Length: 131
Image 1: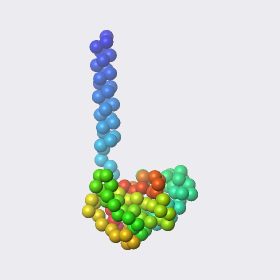
Image 2: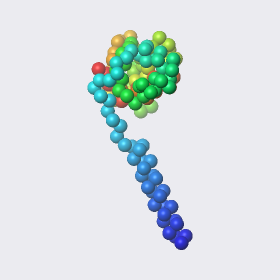
Image 3: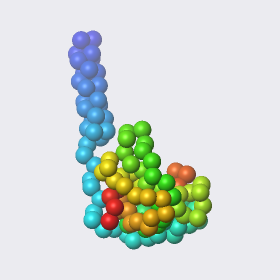
Image 4: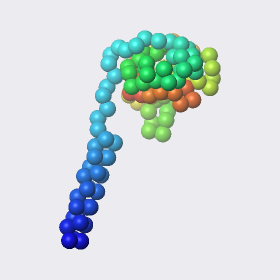
């Protein structure tokens, strides 16, 4: 009886691990070539006014965010992160680019297409590309 119970527990652990691994490593959808067009300033203002309503409107949707580049850096995964100015240095739009060779210069006006992942000290976009 104890042996059967142990086998059931091991099978459940393996099944649970497989589900977690699938969710963690499953392919992410690519953003559409176009999405909801908005400026970086307007997006930041909407999120600062009502984060819950903004999440309902933008979260996990493809956005086309336009604005002036305030910073270009690399994150811990060596991905290029283009930061768009919003008028509030504490709430800038951070765009993690798909192309590790993406380039932009400070002050340049760009349009970035990517998935909105919500607000974390500024709106975060992932899987981005320049339009």
